[in-house]
Length: 216
Image (cartoon, rainbow, N blue to C red; front, side, top):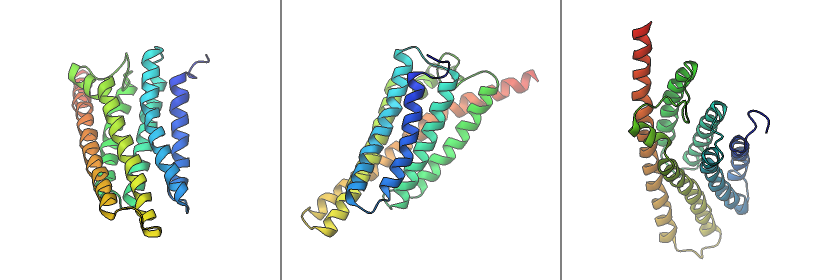
């Protein structure tokens, strides 16, 4: 396979492309468009798990793949949280926190990359075992992906059901309200996990910066 064109990278680019389709579907006029948006949201997040799984399974973890994966994750997360906030499905502070955390950790990872380190893989900047577990272990990445997929897909799905209720009052209002509340709290938990997964990057990053400063 041509250098840089690996199966994990193909999955990453594909799921990044899908998020722009999701935006169009989420703001479509038909109910079916919104339903499809919920499905695409879940598929996009499953792709996040899949590219990491393939990278480990096929031993195709590369610096390029690490950079692409982080960039795709950030774009997808930011776009989806902004959509949910714009549709009044989550509070505005969630995308504000997620975007701020992303800028901070990506700035640190960018500095680490200039020193020859990557976010994940063999050349990871994470030196502590707990840091590697929180940021890169399969269980943490999978759990976080499930939380995000559930939050995005669930909230978009129940937003559609709420619209169905207005047009055709056949679904219990309380049932839809409960569904939206579950998605809301799941989004809050996902945000907390997002913050927790960023802490080791900040800690290790400042250690790296201090170490380079001492050698300057």
